[in-house]
Amino acid sequence: MMYRENDRPMSPQLALRVAIIGGVTLVMFGVIFFRLWYLQVLSGDKYLAEANNNRVRDIVVQAPRGQIVDRNGRVLVENRSGYAVKVSPAKLPKDPAERRTLFDNLARVLGEKPRSLLHDVNKQFKAVPFQSATVKNDVSQPMYAYILEHQESFPGVSVEQVFFRSYPHKEIGAHLFGTVGPVTADQLKQKRYRGVNMNDRVGQSGIESEYDRYLRGVDGADRVQVDAMGSLRGELTKRAPKSGRQLRLTIDYNVQKVGQDAMAGRRGAFVAMDIHSGEVRALGSEPSFDPNLFAKTIKQSDYDRLTSASNGAPLTNRAIAGAYPTGSTFKPITSVAALESGVIGTDTPYTDTGSFSLGGGLTLHNAGNASYGTLAIRRALQVSSDVFFYHLGFELNSAGDGQQLQKWAHLLGIGRNTGIDLPGEAPGILPSRKYIDHQYALHNKNPKLSLIDRPWSVGDNVNTAIGQGYLQANPLQLAVAYATIANGGRVVRPHIGLRVEDAAGRAIQELRFSARRHVSIKSQFRQVILGGLFDAAEMPSGTSYPVFGADKKFPIKVAGKTGTAQRNGQNDQSWYVVLAPYPNPRYVIAVTVENGGFGVEAAAPVAKKIIGALFNVKVKQATPLSTSGINLHG
View 1 (spheres, rainbow, N blue to C red):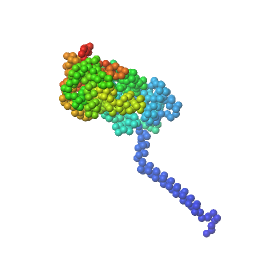
View 2 (cartoon, one colour):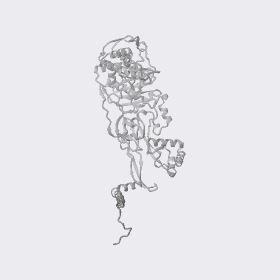
View 3 (cartoon, rainbow, N blue to C red):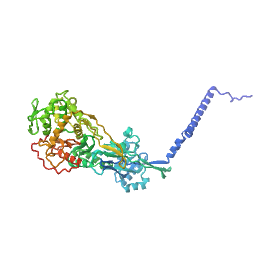
View 4 (cartoon, rainbow, N blue to C red):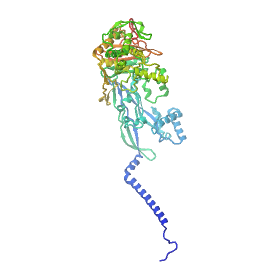
């Protein structure tokens, strides 16, 4: 065999290179082959479904929320349908000029300013990325018809049927219901919102939030087929929305309305509650507001007005978040502490000379410099002797650990939340040695942190004993405390929810609320306290006798306590807390009026009207009170 010059054997280096290139090529072909096999064989069904989905669209059909009704079935919150214009961030034009043109067109049709629309939409996109933004709620029929007919001029814009909450009674019960709004990104991470979609509306405050899981329905969907250009080709299936459950409240609309009408024009709050079950028959705060303002996107000017202190901050629920000195309505609580601590007995006498010397040259007096002579606790409650209760506060400061008043007040619910099924409750302040010394330490660090510039002293206990000093409470807390004394020591949990029902009003689930704790109060102590409150309302010289005992036509006998509390820089806070009927009370009513003056003149008449509504008794028009011989400050 002959060899040519170019037929030399392949060098080892070249052979290695060829082997490497061949191996890489083989691996690449292998990767491509296995990838194709994976796509075609293993994932074929998945991608076939995704391809089909490119031709199918689900149009969400919003579910209406359940109605809210009062205990008698009267509708308090319902729905009305409307249309909302929305824009999808994924479908909006990318070109800035085209986007400006779009918003110019929208502003012209909707009667808005283009810059305002764009600002609102961008704000919503920033808050919840990828969620459709609402351009305008509750648009008119001509508006949404025009947008649908000229869809080519409104890319990324859709018109959806939505449901808005409607409040037929306007201001009546406004502080109970709360608001509904789009679910937030943070809420979607919570367990309670499992199954909620990005665009769903949920309860954001009040009863709407507390019972959202029942009131919220399940959205439906219309599945349609579209072509490659996105044009509708036909309807495939429909899944009807499922409306939310109906919620029945413990509230009695008639009692609620009477209470709010009686308080109209004033600032304050009231509560009417069953002392055995904790069912709230009425709970109101004044000034009130029209919750229909929140059914759509509320204007900033309206929100500012509703939160302005100069307007009375109507959004504040004073019944559960108010913070007021209670005045003499605190005296039954002081009575429990003194009796249970052994400071006095039911018949222990004390001579009220009209003044009480605290030491250090400080002398405290009864209102109007009155003196009541020798009296025991029942009579002291009837006439509301400040001197008697100053004495109890002083003695309680030396009993046990010196905090017996605070111990019993805390057990009865002062300085702590009641657990009502409404968000936004405030605990108030129960002054104790620990609290005041802590505030004093903060003041020493920085006077801006606390206004309390001295440590605890016996004077704090003396002041607290008559509901003054640093004490702050709200009507619901006092209602719970009085209910506990009257019902034998059971600290009920106040509640607004009664049961969950279907659309026809048939019960699905009863809402149950167990007692929070039991306070052991001796029966003889309870009876003497209730007797003192009865005398205060029904016997001459009782602090609320002019409202109740003097009205011989009013058939309901009651046990009640007035309160007239001093507030820095304001007129006196008017209070009345009453149990009815006596001697076997079923209800407690607590009323407070800011800058109302004497409890017997402002708060007690409101409570009387509420009692009348509870027992279906007509209350005649108030007549000028004869208050001769009455301790108006008591």
